[in-house]
Image (cartoon, rainbow, N blue to C red; front, side):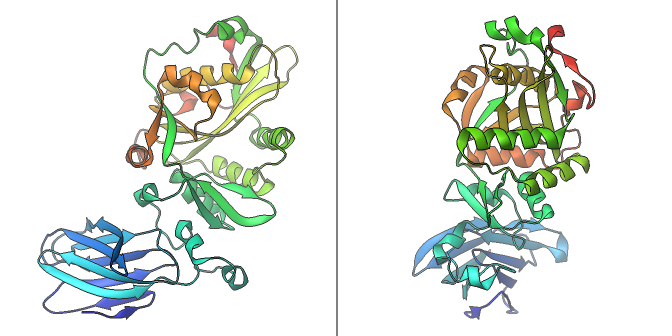
Length: 366
């Protein structure tokens, strides 16, 4: 059967499985009601050329068995052929992606090229492993709510806000720099660390908003701009205060004993046993290398607290010194398999096993 589809169409044929096809601005989802267990394959073509394919995931059992498949990163306002293969049945249909996203201002949508919508993520999307199939290192969303920000963070997509632009960039590297944490790493054997660690003490989430604001001012001063906005600070602090086992927000602060100054910080979030830095700053810059010292101390604490992977994002040149601590580039698909395993993990790692919020850790004792 062939039909032209809008947002959602159901195709029913007594001799074939029942199929419902739904469209967004850049994706198509099919749901197939099955009478018997069989593999379901979705293929999306444009002018005879394959644009995407996926194998369906099964939900339910018995008479309620439903197979769901989806293809993403399609061009907006474009006609595609949809082929659904379910066992011995093949259903061919035709439909069009929407011209704009759900609730998107029309005056802005009209100015965007159709191809720009390919990397858009919004409220209408059910986020998941398909994010690893993105053809670029960057996705984008529009004026996200706090729940949408939380969904993105939970799915390994951080958000770079701009107070002058409601279009928010989301780094989604095709290769991600990560440290695989394992017992026995010699985190504190560095000469500089041994010589200077006694000059500092460490806290966790002592002054989250103030430290995050200090990061904003630091990056604005050193780089000429910052993506750390008041709205982002507010959203992340709210998420921190509403902490769940699935998504935790962290601020690791290094303080100079002699002056009481904040010397360095690492801002992070965690899912399960994966720890993810989203920004760092070194405020006291001298021969002690406070930022590097803090990274090594944190590596030891993460290891002791049960974390197995430390995700840093795009690899910068200074990170190479941490290759010796298990640092390596991980392809996005492999990374997403590791990340998905941690979602909903019953016994996640917890940095509070090493130091509780409100307490101090004198690095001289390490």
